Length: 157
Length: 471
Image 1 (tube, rainbow over the protein chains, first blue to last red):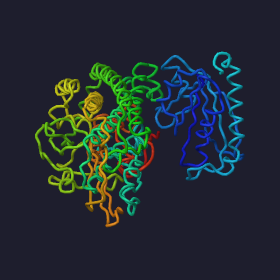
Image 2 (image 1 turned 90 degrees about the vertical axis):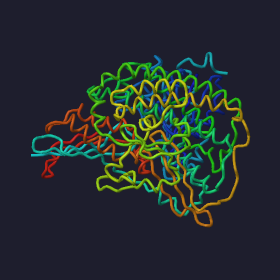
Image 3 (image 1 turned 60 degrees about the vertical axis):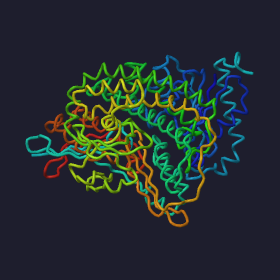
Image 4 (image 1 turned 180 degrees about the vertical axis):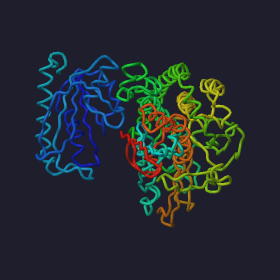
């Protein structure tokens, strides 16, 4: 399974870009075993779901000077010294999946630069305009990662 | 020279707080306080809003127990409408509230306190978290995560989303339960019950490691308060209030929760933003009481469900049944109860009825809603004008009821474990652990936002800061 987790606060304008893009992936990607999960924040309850995936893609917003910029990085499991309650990172979740279930999928963190993080239920104009392009970029990253991990041989529809 | 220790912030609780400990010239603890350092003001900024917005607004007080506020707020709105809501709606609200209590208790027990209970109070703080638990005993961590997940999934099935569901409305609930959802909830509830029972057995096996803490956390003797029903059973949604002293004697019984202002008064102390309720007829300090799982189990005769009742019988045999350390034990029994009760309620004949809401315009200018939240008795009280706009809101939150008791417990535990001018991690953690046992939600109780770091300061009688530990 490819698991896509789009997270952010939909009441904080562009902070919700991860949710928007994850929802778009539901339409754009054609894998038979694709699961999209939309959430406000990463929480420990995601660990069991993550442990059942081969690839997990975290999509989040970030602060930066180029709104709409998409960057991605491989995430390796890393234990946190925190209490695993308020602040949980993708690396922490992968580590917990390994500790608790003996499985840690390949992790990719895709970060999208937002323009406006103030109160608001809608994306900024910049991100609204760029959303189709951003979605295409994210789709390409996921497809490329799936190819690298030979995922598509059995699972691509 | 006496000194002052400050623990700031207190960790692994919900919200912001600090602890100060005053030492005398001999280096022994002379005084200590639990300070809640945050403020939000929900009672003020909801003034002028239409009353029917209150359940949705008030649930925003908290991300851990939004359902509790939703339920109490909706009950206050029912009182404004002066309606009796359909029995099915009552039972559905009960199920939602029980799922909320189960998931919140799971968070407290597994995420926040199990690191102390499994790894020990003196364990390396780097390991003293859910990760440390996962390494030492993976099944315990898996159970904790699963249990919380079950509670949240039941909330999502009923309310549409896990956090801040809008399904509970003035007059009932917005839509009936389907048979598919009922069956899903029954299956999850069964799993939750099995996990709770397994954890209870485990907890009993390690409890003897904490004899000293159980004794130290039990020095403070207060009354207990909670809801109960006509059968003197555990009651989370309705009923009347009972206050009982530390020896088990009823101080006040069959109190109508709507009359709370006649018997509860809120005091303000200079060291904290959290108000401190006391039982009005006795005043401070005799009128100090505790609420929450420990209080609820102490004031009732039975839980009203078979396995929880068996567990309660064992609980009654404890040496220090009123020790705040036993909040943990009580929490586990309540989780058992929640899943047993959910199953009972789901088997009531009319649970799938589509009569789930009473419609009316406001018929009263004030309304009080009281229910049991995970941390104790929750009171919402609204007054409205002729247009249905809020003119006054008063909230007494579970953690607030416990404020004086937490403050006194900090002092007693500090006296027992803190000595000399240098701080040790184990000392610091034990002082925090007594607060953690109450599972305070300071974001709720000050209706404020935040997480819970802790600071301990060691200060001389002259006011000089001698030592400090921050997290």
